[in-house]
Amino acid sequence: MILGMSTLAGLAQLRPGVRRLRASSYDPTGGNRDWWEFQPGQVRTIAELNGPGCIKHIWLTMGSEDKYMYRRVLLRMFWDGEANPSVETPIGDFFGMGHSMTRNFVSLPLQMSPQDGRGFNCWFPMPFDSGARIEVLNETEKQVNVYFYVDYEAYPAGT
Image (cartoon, rainbow, N blue to C red; front, top):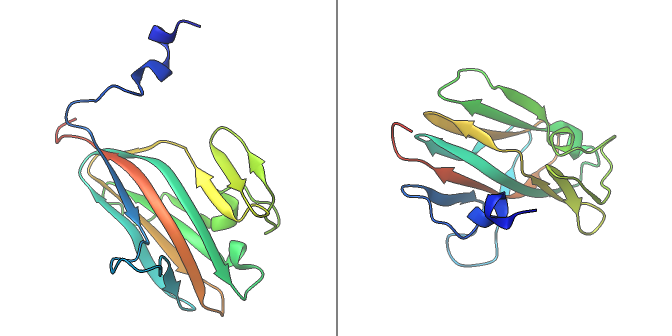
């Protein structure tokens, strides 16, 4: 492999006009309450991204007394002002989970780990032209606490 021709060679290169940003559930007070509470039936926007860009990574974990929460909490993704989501799926399914059971696994675009696979990662690049919105909908009958971050690149207008 010739390093100069690989994608690894570009890791240390700054790209003009590209900004790396994050939307997350962090505690803005500086405390340690780094989750969002979702009541039964509640939908919340976890990322509202404006302008052209690309989601590079999503990390998420959650907790609830509902043992089927991975099938009953939905992830919705909207691109470029769509009225209806392009993605609408149970969170567990999105991250490659079968039968609502957490397990450790690693693949190129998806990962569940550590502690019996309760931390979910997605590295599918998700480009958008004018904006993106990610929502979480709690269809359980219990409160669900969601911890997350969405890493993305913002590009200059017109790119």
